[in-house]
Image (cartoon, rainbow over all chains, first blue to last red; front, side, top):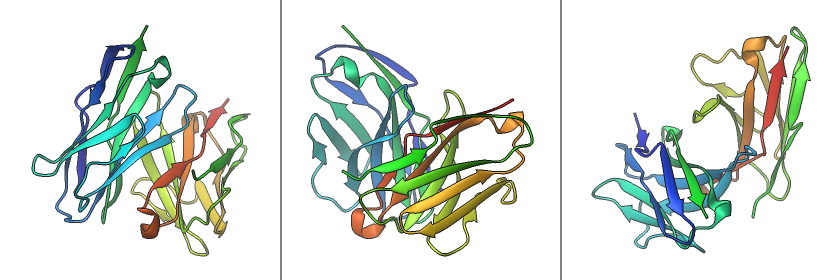
Length: 112
Length: 117
């Protein structure tokens, strides 16, 4: 069985600072994908970034980057230069042969 | 980016009535669509997976006669909550995927908040 762990239930960060959201995973499947989604208070789930298990380089999408450390089974999301609009729930997820599994989420609050 | 439309966004209904929720992929063909349920302050719980033209695969503990899923085309899936009761009140959210060639990325609709009185 696969598992996703997000150890930070909530975080407060000052605007313009960088943020790292932790995510560790466990799977026996050698081929898997890692995803991060943002869920604002409106409820929609917004896809942010994807990392494949065989990708050699860390994924980046604008201000988002994924710090993929395969040996440690971690896939932390880094948000650079945080903005007030980044306040939301953030979910880490993993797709393997067992399907897509979500972590419990981290509630990020950006303070002015 | 890929757009998934979910309708309606909010439903309030009486106990015993049925509610239909639509999920459409607007700019891509979805080989697979997924239906999730989310309780307040919790993560998403997968209810079922549906492929176009075939029966949905339900997760353990999800009543297939209660939550009817129809995936009639590559761009449309519907979830019908039959004979809804107050305990069915929840946030339902769908997602669509174009499959492995699109990295299995799931794009989500905006969700439907169901309140059963």
